[in-house]
Structure formats: C-alpha cells, structure tokens
Length: 417
Image (cartoon, rainbow, N blue to C red):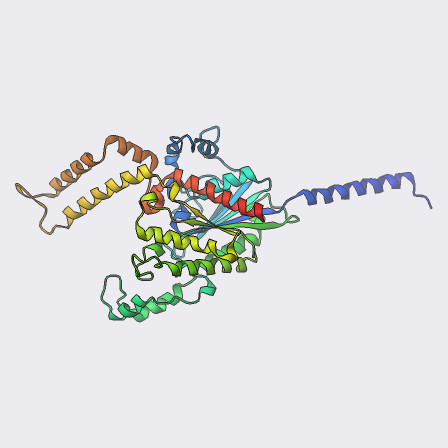
C-alpha cells in the first residue's frame, strides 16, 4: 500500500528533526569538572591591587593581558563557572558564578573578597585550551592541617608521635596541652572534619550542576577531569606531629597521609583515574631553609609512587616566589624584630640620656626602618605585595603563575590519558 505524498513529507520532517536532535546531543560534550582544595594559599591572599606588578615582567605580561578585559577590569570567563565553599566555624557558605577575580580569600563566602588564589588563572587557562564548558569546585579554609583537619578515612585516627607520647602527659607548657585527656578527645572530634566538608560540598554541586553552571547539559553529563591540592603550612610548622628537626625523613608521615588522601578522594568521588596536581610548597623561594626543602620533598614523594605514575603530578611553586619582594620582606622582618625587642624591655630601652619613652621608641623604629628600606623598595613592596610571607607575600604574580602551571599540568595528564 503506498503512502500519500503529504504523509511522506511529514515523516521526512520528523526524521530530520530526530536526526538533528541526535546529532546535537552527540556533539554536546560533558561538562568538565575540576576540584581545587587546600588551606589559606588555596583560598588566596593576593589583592587585585597587585595586578600591575605582573606587567613589570615581560614574560608574565601576556598573562596579565588575559587577566584583564578591554575596560581594564578583571576578565569574566564566558564558559568557566566556579562554586567556592569556604568560611570559618559554623559560617561556612558558598559563592558561585562565572569565574573572575574575587574568588580568593573571603570574609563572607558569598561576597567578592577583592583577592585571587590560583583559581583565576587556572580557569583562564582552561577557558583558552578547552572547547567545552568548565566548572571549578573550590573548597578551602585557612589554618588547616592534613594530619588532622583534612585527614582522610584510610589514614585512620590521629596517632601521637613519639615526642608527644613522652612529653604531653607531663603538661609542661610550650604548646603542650594542659588537659591531655581533653586534647585527645578533641582530636578525635576534629579529625577529618574538613575532608568530609570538602567531599560533601563537591557531591552537593554534582547533584545539580545546572544550579551553578547554566551551560550544563544533563544529556551530555559531566566528567571529573582534575583535582588540585595546595596546602601544607600547618603541617610544615608543626614540630610536635613532625618532631625530627633537621632529619631528611622528618616529613615522611605527610607523604603517607597525602597518598591516602589521593586514594580516598578518588574513591569517594568515584573517579579512579582522576588527574591530581600537588602544588608543592614554594614559600621562601630559592633561599628556603632545610626544613622547607625537606617538606617539599615529602610533598613530591606521592607523585613518584608507581601507582600514581602519569596520573599525579607535583608542581613546584618555589619558582613563582618573588625573590625581590622576599628580600624586602626580610628587611621588614628585621624592623618588626627591633620593635618587638624595644617593646619587650621591662623598663624601656636605655640610651645615653636614660630610658626611652614610648615616643622615642617609635621614632627610633621609624628611623631604623628608613635607614634599612629605601623609598624605591617601599614603592615596589606596595606595588607587588599585600600579605605575609606564608601567604606568598599576597603577590598576584605568584598566584597567577601558579594557577597557570597547575592547569597546564592537569591538561597534560588528561592528554596522556
């Protein structure tokens, strides 16, 4: 039986429509998910006001150009979104939207903090290299350790070091808890809290990506494409958990904990092959002390394990430390030491005329600073730095180069996979 001409036309149009829908669905690529986590340097303490300093270096100037739009304001990415979960205590909250500057450290989670961490240029690099939309999920809190706060499930409970076993029960002060039993109980409660908060937030975003990223296509789905870890300060300076000062194996425990962390994150997010980037501690740059160097080695170690070959990359951040700003920071440190020394004298600092008055102390410190730090150095400091050394001097150039390097390392692993 022949089909009437008008029915043939309708069937043809329906077939074309179905083919177009199928083709569009096939061409739509999964949303790329990248997770950033850590403590205060992952938060990021580089003020936007230090952006101009980036342009002083011809090699970094092209990056600054990408960080700013034609109007001179920070670039707003068109196909990169971010969900940022942070806060303190019970004030944790989320800020989200298209990626731009301001997703660094925040007083209020939902409000622009005027700072950047590595997320800004990390996203800009992905925006340039990838065709599909990108969603960055960032979780970061200042002052958190891997040995306690971010301790992952397979690492087990917090274990006292031999030094703690010998000294904590004595209750001798100098950082030793007065109530040892209460300290042990608190340690159990605190262990793994921020690891769980991190995983919970990532899963909350993944349950409804479109809430944060309007470009998300449920038909295409999403793919967890990378994880960046930038943390370490609180572990590095903890002489009780890591007591063997000066010994090359002092931070071996950190390497073990980080290896557990990587395995657990992959398991808990059902992403067994997820590329992981470790941002290796760079504070102090090339002039860092022996303990910092030992800690860098411990952070790098997991990437050298056979099981992590090709899917975990350790990226040194010391090359991005501003040596010239670091030298000025050392001078400001001497000024602070002098001020502290004068203020710590019970009866004032004696001079030829007797004891210094508070006003004389201030004038002495003021002159000491002027003699030590030149006007040109003061101007350079104001141009490039906005925070302390343990926050990479709050230098936007450092964080910008860091974010770019993290993205490139992540993309290289994706390419190899």
